[in-house]
Length: 243
Image (cartoon, rainbow, N blue to C red; front, side, top):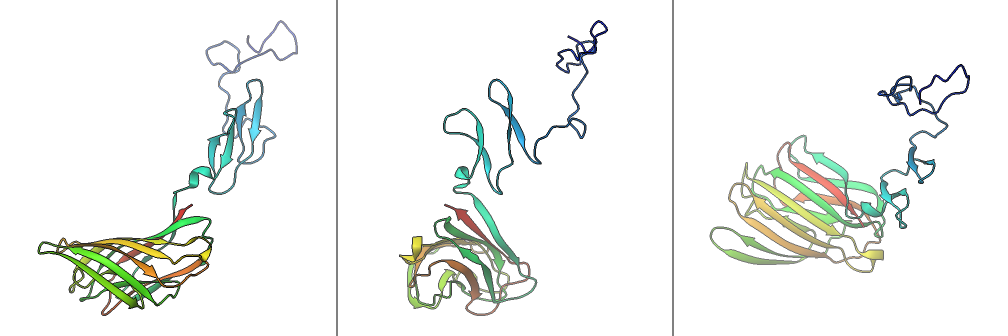
């Protein structure tokens, strides 16, 4: 039924259907239609009336509730999500950089992930130190066209995540992915798993390490070289994976 109605001043029922004569046309939502809802709210139907759902918290997602009767905001599906902590793009030749951040509750994250793409100015080992722990063990395997080589480094002041065999000289490049597992409640030692690939030789290294120490939480991750420097525009990005 349209808006007009036999001289009555009563607003007739209408649907804002533009195909119905005198039904009000399209309902304009853009800065015209008003309600008493709060900023950021959304609406849903309970089967009879429209209901307001206030805006959720930062990082929350809209999901269906346990009873499958209404939408709600939740962090449940943030589990496994990667969140960037920081990206460092080297403005020049450098041999060390430290990612510093607010303490991460081990109950909130399952791991830190370092992703990098870098070039060496000369032969070097790329190394990593977790929370200033300087007694570490690394076991890894290198695969290249000549052989498969197993290596073990014990009582090291750092974790080796890319060797000078891959970064064997100036302009050699490598990509890498490093998982840094933070222990729950500091009861076990942080562990590291990594894989790196040289773009020049095609050689690959993968392995893991153990930090001989038990920090209660993480606040810094340092990357450094054993010798020489990495080149300008080498990129290192640190992420956290939500638990």
